[in-house]
Length: 397
Image (cartoon, rainbow, N blue to C red; front, side, top):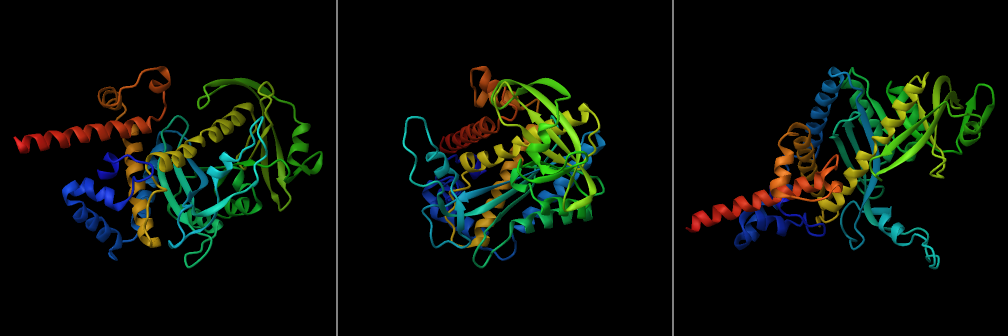
């Protein structure tokens, strides 16, 4: 409740601030001590929350399958930047996305002095369960470091997740991954655990075409003419795109016994480079190819997850020395985020009333948001603050 009420990007997860909201500002030290005791307790670990979210994800996957929808497991990586920190446990070198944005070349200005900026921080791997036209839910949030006592490899995160899915689920899900996962080991593990995948492929990786032989991906795409065209609405940028799509069967050189399918997406009017998608699912018609494209575009929801976590829930603000305590606090924040998503999924008729009364906004841009997570949290915060003020007034009267 305190996390929902206190909205601040820089101080949202400071224990002293949350303690004041729990016990009142006059008793802030007592509230801070309660939270500290909770996070330091040896009676529970962050894995408790991970197991709870994974159990809910399995139920969601079975429910989507029963409704005739293909479950999607969205993957992506980000990082938590702590540029002012130095002595906290678990810090490693991460590329600064903020520095990358600030040093981006702009017309009329000089080239920045550094092309890559690294700061202290740690890595973040997220997986979300969803389906076309559905609001996602959290499957697993993993924070890991690449150096020190708690050193971890990015490939281990995927290996453990695929192993859990293979053991506990009969239903197959479609793993949707971005270009960071475009490698041979991703295909190898997906095949080992018998999982379907759809990954955005890189143009310079070698593939084998049945007629043209071994060539780079973009060279194979030159021989493919668009078999279908469609006007697609880009819901994030609020623009329409004239998309042409083509597909063919290919083989990866390291897996000659496995037939894969390459999908090429072109937007010539937008003057953008083609997008390449590689999947193990059978693509024999334009309908199948369009479904793969829409499944990949649905992956944007996980990008929103990182944005909400950093900008709205303050995941870059914790100042905890010890690694396990920090993981516990971020696991609690994950529960808060999943609670907000569950409200949007399960209370679809009540949410417009809540937003209208406690977080009114004008303009189509605000009313047409597919996942109004920011307005929902603000509405809950305003509602809870009003209830707290009312109870204080009644007690004083």
